[in-house]
Image 1 (spheres, rainbow, N blue to C red):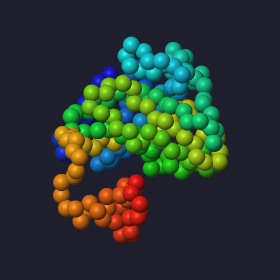
Image 2 (image 1 turned 180 degrees about the vertical axis):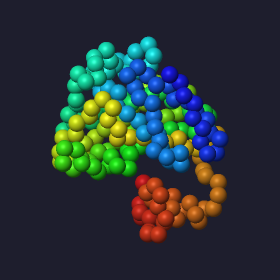
Image 3 (image 1 turned 135 degrees about the vertical axis):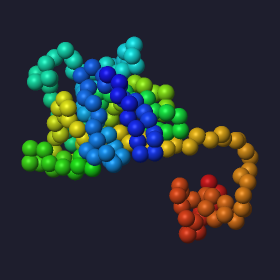
Image 4 (image 1 turned 30 degrees about the vertical axis):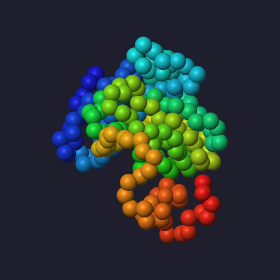
Length: 199
């Protein structure tokens, strides 16, 4: 099933709901994120099918009420969760899978759960039409039960400038500006003295 969505600035993109997936939802028309739902746990050792989707641990022919619950324990390896939808994003934009506000720290069975989406900084590029997935890490102290339809992340689509790069031996611009900040950490203001020895 294919649905087309339109944002406030006239941005239009399409969702394709895969077998066993649920249609993404927004709580309010002004929300920037679309809530996504767990379809299946992705087998980290599985290959890719003809449609580009990873193999899943859950057999989609199994009735919903009989599908297993996956237990993600604290300090265990991360697990990839297939989110049951693909998206077609136009050029000049990128998508990101982010945790929902209520999923960073919440209660499940009366216990505090804290999750991190490890791939939240990885862009979904225009042209990628495979299943969206989330790499989930339990950074809390209690086990987290991932069930079919669990809702803990969202898709955010943002503007992304695409420019042309040039390889140079020296940067153009102010030498004073470059000397002040050039050898320090990413995002440095240059407020402290740079290292005395070259890197």
